[in-house]
Amino acid sequence: MNFKRICVGAKAGALTGFVSSDNGSYFGLSAFHVLSGSNRVIDPFDDKVEVFNMETNRWLQFGTTIDGRYYKGDGTINNFGILDYAYFDMFSTFKDRIKNNLTLINVSQFLYNINKLTLKDRIVFGYSVIDEKEIVGKLSNIFYEGPNNRFDVEIEITSGHTNEGDSGMLWRDEYNQPFLMHIRGNTNNNSTKSYATFLDRIIGHRTFYNYEERLTI
Amino acid sequence: MKTNLFSIVTLTFILSGCATVKFYSDKELTKESGVEFYSPKPYLIVERNPAKDVSMKMTIVYLPDFNNPKYAKLSPGFGTSDLKLSLENGIITSYGINSDSKIPETLTAISGLVSGTGTSYKSIAEALSILKDNKDEKEQSGDISSMKEAQDIISLVKTDIEQEKTKTGDHISEIQKSKIKQLNDSIVKIENLLIKRISKDIPAIARIMASSIKLIDEIKTTSTSPNANDFNGRMETRKNEIQVAMNKISPPKKADLATVEVYEIINKSGSTELKRIEMK
Image 1 (spheres, each protein chain N blue to C red):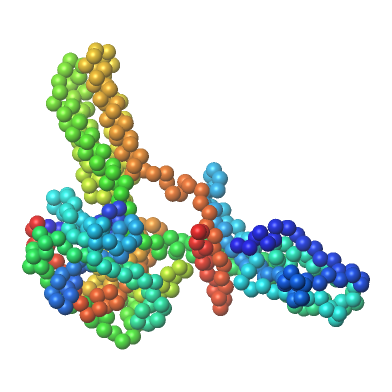
Image 2 (tube, chains in turn blue, cyan):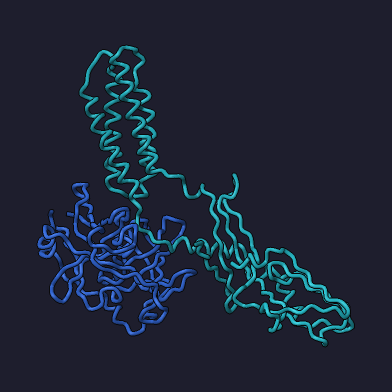
């Protein structure tokens, strides 16, 4: 099963990946403004997460959003830009099957850099679930202060596009390790810029997992 | 805003000879005050589609900065004769004094704020660039609610058209049957695209819907038999249903709607920023 696109009600986005808590529970991760639905309020009884099976062309009931955070950032080095993430619990029918097909993956070594400003010009790689194509970008600004919002990272897209519906997408570093979460930017809209959040601010010390394409549901 | 306090558009104070006017901040007239006025603060008004063939209109306006009131007080050293102080919406628009004293530089500076308007921002092009950046920063989750609703309608249309394919009768020619099959294929295609709920597919889906509606008109028979009338009626219903689905996914383009945005123009250390004012 190729499952990368998710939606909650009217809001569609991309599955970032999976994280586990200390007690071994697994959760799906994406942007808050996707997983909280149109009303932007997390309600486990209301925010039903659907996942799109691209092989069968069907949306499946996948789980419910349980928690998340939307915070504008205070402009300080360790808490600079927008935090826009939430995670969801999977229905029991998926839980074991997902769990057995996850691959533990270490987050980017660059996230351990004491001075993140040195990460400028690093190349990053994403995958648009809308275009179903790879995206390549360059970190054009670290700790970017826009007209209305602050972002940990501004990315200059050099190949491919980020689209409406790609929110939550995972950016990987040049070593293919999880690095950033895509939270803003539509480069089909006469722009070449997208914006992302450092993954360590989102998952903290939780372990990040990637899912395997071999999974069949 | 406190605009109601300034319903009198222009207020002119004329102080002449021995006649004096004093201002008080309390009704008991115990706390003498100066004439309250405000510095002008620049705002950019962006009107999108304000008129036919006009996609954008930008205007700089100056409104009183209510957060920073200033006070003018008449004092003997200020002048000896007539003083005219004109305010408009709380902002000094002109002043004049007939005296032998020199006009204080402070008042000149204040007046300069009014007359010097239009130069506190770098360029409209820069402002537009900033506006464009704002647009890019919008959340980009796909809004798929209309596609879900359209899909429900199209799924029903598909079922009906599939049934139509199996029906036979003298009123339907082979060409019409071929076109019904063609219509069915289009509806299946529309449904498959709607299921994916990719909002950027909407223009393509709308085009297929429009051609399907056109195709239905071609499918209708000219026969006047009761079967033919029923057939045409069903086709008309399907056509209307597709039109409803099309309307669902094609709301009035945002670009066609007249909208007004207001931005505060902020100059900080030589750079210009536009801060959007949220309308509440």
